Amino acid sequence: MASPQELEAVFPLLAGTNYSEESAPSDIYNCIAFAIGDLNNWWWPRKGYGMYWPPGFALSDSVDVLVKIFEDHGYSACDTPEHEDGFEKVSIYSRDDRFKRAARQVASGRWASKLGEEQDIEHDSISHIESVAYGQATHFLRRRRDDWR
Image (cartoon, rainbow, N blue to C red):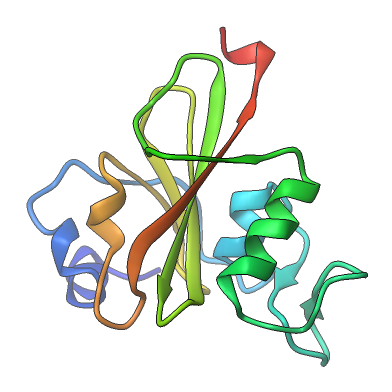
C-alpha cells in the first residue's frame, strides 16, 4: 500500500487535505473501471492480457471515446462537478484531449479515486488528484441515482 508520503509525491494537491484510504491495493481494476463501477477488470484502450475495453468502441484514449462509454452506461454531460442531490457524477482527467484517469462522486459529495494499482481513496475536491502527469479535470458527467435521494 502506498504511504501518504508516496501518494502526496504523485498527487501533491492531496497534501494537508482530508483524504481517506478506502481499500487495499489491487491490480485487478483501475480508475476507469472504478469510476464505471467495475471492480473486476482493468479498462484501457489496448489489446492484451488483463486489458478490457467495451466492444464497439474505438481503441483510443480520446476523451470523446471515454465520454461515449460513460454515456453508454447512463451518464450524460453536465457543466459542473458540484454535488447534486440524486445524481452520481464522474470526472474525466485529461491532457491534450487524451484521458489519463477518472474519478466518481459518492453520495456524500466527496470524490472516490482508484490510484493505479494502489488503493482507492476518497477526497473532498476533484482538484486534489490533478497533476502534471495525470492531467486536469476537464469533463463531467452525471446519472440519476434514485437510491441517493
